[in-house]
Image 1: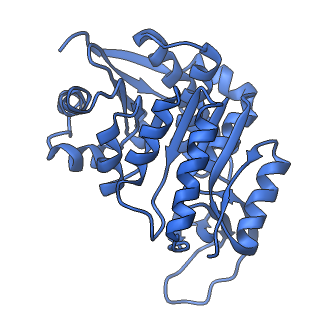
Image 2: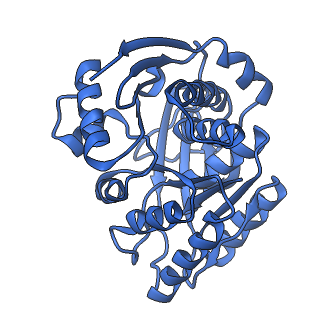
Length: 320
């Protein structure tokens, strides 16, 4: 089973506004709403790809109930810690005329100490039932900055393989517990290691520094539409997606994580380097499929498996 944790969940709303203008009256031509937050996007994609998935995190208020109900409708097991605050909304304004996307993100609820204690206890319970545990997204107010480090340590002790996809200090702190896989983008990798990641060689060197220092098994450096640089202790590859006409790139990184998690969950054992690479190939195809839909966290499984054969893999390094 795969379990995802979204500590700062959201309702993802899309407003279609043709010819969107700042500081002007804009009229909405279409609206969509989905349970969101990065981990919930991972859960939705993983379920579509056929995995048994549980989504956890903090939920509160009417918006939290919407997220819980909609995840359940989609076949995802929803096991949240309910909080006194209100789950946030994340608005994505898509201008199909100008070809732009504008995201407006609410901060989310403030978490009480007793609610945080509940999350740690639930993590232990769910991780013991899971092969793969994914920790994704930002932290809500009220939880300690080392929250991901605490939860990763709990999940690893329970025997699960962990994946971390966050940013800033929460990412840096989370790495202290040595997640099995980490998925920073190029900017986040530069922040972690002090820069020098503009070339593949620089990215590989920076990633290997983290692998050596923190005990991470694989780092997937996201390059947005250009795919990723995948780094282990002994090998590295450039992984490029098939060429597509993207509709909406929000959630593509989450689909990438979902594909990785699905492959490793189905594998059912500790992966070797070649199997880690194959997990990223599946994830890259899932990210491409996600980009074809207006709402994050949706893929066509047939496209994913077909496009996985069109993903390009180029070896970059064989050894340190």
